[in-house]
Length: 99
Image (cartoon, rainbow, N blue to C red; front, side, top):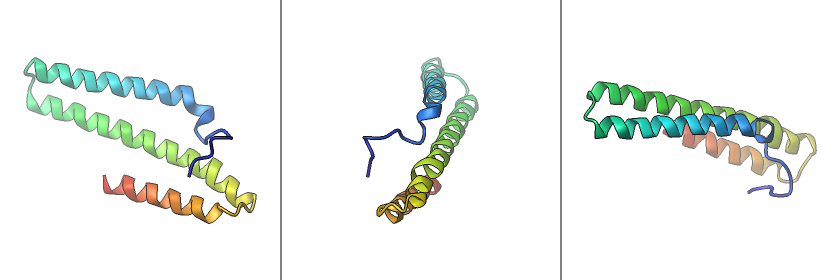
């Protein structure tokens, strides 16, 4: 369920999120280079853990934006799809917790 006719919850932070994603991309390229250059396994694993953490933090920030904007907005407006928004958010939380 996607509302293409309005701004998403992350709209206000979009440039900041894009900058974070660019940093994560750089980290992934760095790991590629480390493997190519036969760097020490533990150093590579440390970088992978840093990327995992960065992605998790980004996901949590996006989830928080979604809850504050999309879910609370639907609930406050008495939107008929409010329950669907809560269910959708819970499914996203479950996926994040499993990973």
